[in-house]
Image (cartoon, rainbow, N blue to C red; front, side, top):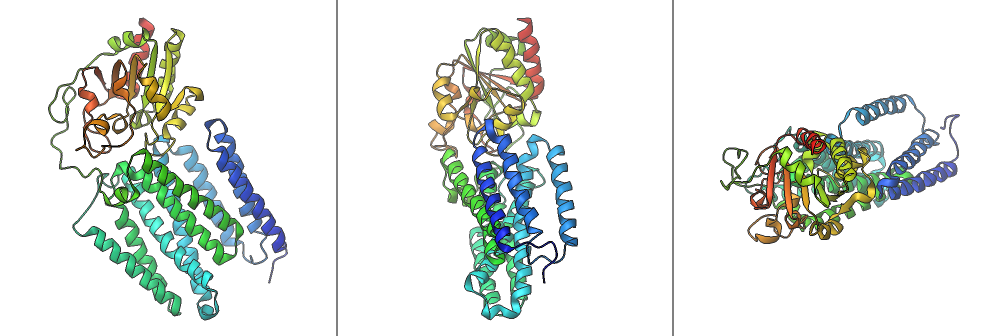
Length: 471
């Protein structure tokens, strides 16, 4: 029985196609900072059409719970977008991705309960879609929550491992698949419940042994999982928008995972099973002036650095997560404007995995209205670093470590880095000599051409601004 609001299924599918086109176009525009804002609006419009036309689907009969869900989701989305700081965006992405995976798992469970009496007559693709959605959606939900916990520092960022962990995880997967088979050949709902419970445990267990430095790759992979699970639920529900949107998310997440792995010169297997960052227990935190192995470093002052910057021909700013934590993007732009007014050419070197997610530094600097042409990716920045008078490293750590090129014993060895040590002079803005997110000491800091300016990044930059004005 349909409601008076219902329209024909052909009309619904037509508007689903329109929403899918808008989503594709919006995602395409996200590839450039110049069009990213517009792309967000276009993609959001596509999703609004998809949600709106679903209310007029011939099979929809009750609107109460849907209205409550839309209202709650809208409030959470608006509050999150306005209240969450840029430094917490990766956590929010992980959390929202987990919510998507959890929603797919709940849909799978509900559809299994609804269709169980007719299980024997259901097409194989419907049964497979239900089971796949329950398995992968649950893994994505639990894994995303663990990733959120690590990024939010509710859980230790280091890998949490125990002997035989890979075997245990493999056993969990086998048992979950066995429960899926049981759910597919019987009408007993206990099998789908066991499948979801085992998948939740597997999702958490699979992410716990992954270090915090690899969380961007893990989040991207889990995002792909959620997309594929959503596409499978689209087949179950006969919803073209879910099929198209889920497939897009799955494909883009998979591609991004591969590209990020290449940027770190590490395979996906190494990310998932390598326990990167599980270094031996560290001793006391290194004090300013000494590296973790006791080697001395050269300290500098804001006044000396200001003279160096003011009389340079080219300065390369290398931003990292420390810039994001200090919310120092605006004062960075202020310093750049002062230097450019003195005839200094200022550029920005952006590593593909700087920060906590791809594009993190680009978004921060765009927020400060840094001109897009001044942002150089790694391949363009490295040749320029050879011609740079001063490389100003603001909070970047692992992506500038020369050990990735020179030390075969280092876990970073082989990872493409920004060749900051090729600049004539290097100034590093850092709170202390503690290692970065990967837990590895940076050989750059003991390089004779490197000077350390210790302190909060924003405070240090403000002191540099004042000192440059006084030069």
